[in-house]
Structure formats: C-alpha cells, structure tokens
Amino acid sequence: MVAVGEEAQVSLAGTPDAEARRARLRETLLSQGVVLLADAARRFEVHPMTIRRDFEHLENSGLARRVRGGIVSAGGEGFAQRRNRRAAAKRRIGRKLLELVEPGCALGLDSSTTVHALAEVVAAGQGISVVTTGLEAFDTLRGRGGVRCYLTGGEHEEENSSLVGPLAVNALRTFHLDVCFLSALGVHPVTGTSESTLEQASVKEAMASASARVVLAVDSSKLGSRSRVRALPLERADVLVTELDPADERLEEYRHRVGELR
Image (cartoon, rainbow, N blue to C red; front, side, top):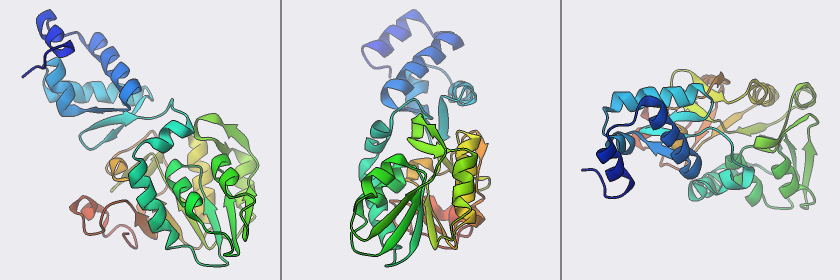
C-alpha cells in the first residue's frame, strides 16, 4: 500500500519517468545515506528490477555503492558524519580489534572511520608504534603516552581525511609492520575489497604489503557490496572483523576465504 503523503502524490501523478525517479532517489540517498530496494519499489510503484537499474545508474555515477537490499552513499560526507553512521557497530568492532593489539608491536592504521574506532580505545603505556595515513587517527593518538605515532606524507584527500599518492605509498614501504588494520568501501566474497579511488586502493595495498598480518575491519552493511576500484583479494586478509557474531549466517560466504572470523 502506498503511504499517505509524498508517496500518495506519486501515485496520483502517475509513475515518474526514469530521470525524475532517479533524481528523487539521489535526494533520498544524500539526505538519508541509504535507499532500500523494497522501499523504493513501493514508493514509486515500479518493479524491483526497475529500481535495480536505477541503483546501477547511481553506482556508475559514483554516488552510491551496492549493499544487501539497497544502496548507500559512496561519498560526499565529511569524516565526522561517516563516523556517526553505524556508530554502535564501529565501537563493537573497535573493541574486537583491540584484542589483536599486543604490547610493543608496530601497527598500520588506515584512514577509515571503522579503524578510527580502534585508535580511540588504544591504551597508553603499551609501547606500540603506529603508522597511519589517517589525519584523524594521527590526531587521536599523537601525544598518547607509550604510543609512538607516524603520519605518512602524501597528498591530502579531503573526503577521507587521508594522505594518499606516491609519497604515502613510499613511506609505507619503509616500515616492517606486525599487523595492519584496514577497512573498505565494499567487501565481496568473490572480488574482495574495493575502494572509490585508485589512490585509496594503492595505499591500502602498500600497507598490507608492509605487514606480517592483515586485519580487515568492516561493518556488516558492506558485506556483499562493491565499489568502483578493486583493492585486496580476500585471501590477503588473515582476519575479518565485523560487529556480528562469527557464527552469523551472513558471514558464511567469507568463512573459507579468510584466515579467521571475529
């Protein structure tokens, strides 16, 4: 049944053409950050396959990325806004990641809001070293007693509050890291992780190559989704960490593709 209000007006006016419908979907995506397939099909009174084609158009335009049951915004938000999205899941992931940090080890942290949840809970006095491409992670950790923090050089990528480019890649190549913590825009069971830019994919590849162990940390909304640029195959991840219980059926496709689920 079409809801009273905006959806009812759509019903009275007839189904909008593809251009108008996609414009409305873009507005919803920018304001809410997510559009669900079933909701959109009901709203515009069209077949779900029509909405899937609309989603594909938005994804190809770089505005969205696919997730199970819909799409989410692929960018255009500041770090603080993205940090607050699925905040409870990220805090749970951060606590799980902390269990993988041993005293005296050398860590690599990417610039993601998910991995930033680890930076927030790292305790002082552990004698660890941290190398990061993330300006927010560096700002959180610098000056924390017993944590030696390095910020790579590089070009400032404002969207991710990150440093990228050849300087960042070369800086990462100078380190031997015990473990790195990486997130991704999308994690697909066949194609692996993906990013919105080649630059992000390059720095994550460099950090993974510098590390004895690779930990991939994503919230469950990213499972099964893909962004524009391929990054790491799942086989490169020694551990996959989500907010889910490791026995959750949503992780079944990943169970035999990574070394460990947490």
